[in-house]
Image (tube, rainbow, N blue to C red):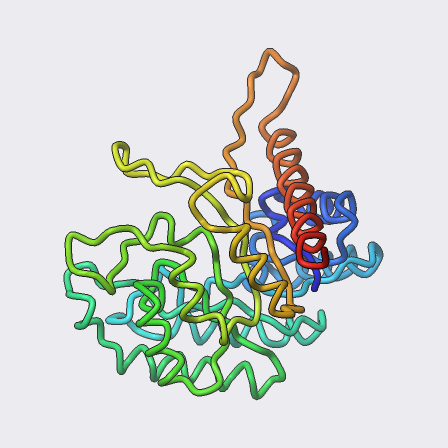
Length: 294
């Protein structure tokens, strides 16, 4: 088992991302945004610089946190952007030796019912993306986010059934703020534990987020791991007790609240929050392992 994280939540530039990773004693970054662009979209010149800095530091990119087929892409629009992102990502991943890429299953169509989501076209497209990556020796992992598979555990299982071999990255925090379309309207929010129990046999990788849904203000209050409703501790304990040996990637989303008169900067608070989140995650894992082994 290894720890990693979306280090763009610590710093915008690759040097700051590497610094936060090394401060935690980790060797991996799940790369999403570097500077002003996603890793598969930045210029060749910028990508060359990133490769050089990683090589010098001894830090690796274990996963591309891509935008491929994500909630920003509609299933009733052309497939071109996701195909282009995939074609750009593959050679960059091969150069870095990165074996995992996060993908999704396109945005939920808001004007349609959960069972009228053009699912056959979604399955066809995800199958094509899956083949492109696996033919290149890369494992695509589907995230339960704001997409077809994220509507509830039954939809994730439908996706797996129709895309043979597809594996998952399970995000503990997304159920906290996502409507559970497996239940009648008006939809309640999902249970992370319930979702996890149904899909755990297909989990290849884990994202750690946590939070509390503020129904009055219709927003999520993100918390440190274990302090919210994402069942983080329960899920991590079940994974480790079952012999899970994959990656655990932090995605804090903790707000960078700072006060100018304190001498802090927003960037400094963001960096400190990321490192603190990582330390708390390490402590949780250590405590859980001691419980399991006691």
